[in-house]
Image 1 (cartoon, rainbow, N blue to C red):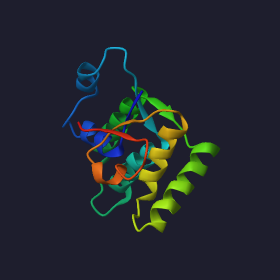
Image 2: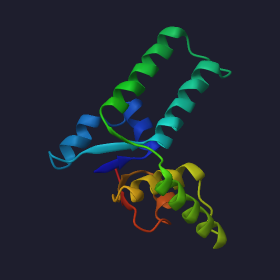
Image 3: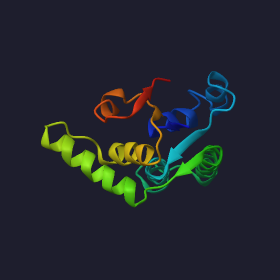
Length: 140
């Protein structure tokens, strides 16, 4: 299982990458996943387009919403459960205690991956995730 970080999902939505190209670049039986915190971040971006200063018209909003839904439907979804929440709190506070703060959502994403006994994450945010033991960063 290979997880997409939110930044890669945004790149896919903007046409910089395609889900199909990722699937072709890896083993044919490799599965791709997303975490619920990434889904939250994607929809936060969407609702910024709907309610923000520079609102999109309904036609463009509908297109954006469909693109997000299509991407998510093509991936396995992993949610924050009790084990991932515990791990996330531990990682967050440990890194904080040694002066290496980390974005809360990145911590949640990594913890969900680790709590489900996976390690592979495609991300451009190497600096964020290299602090978390057990996460295998794959550059796009």
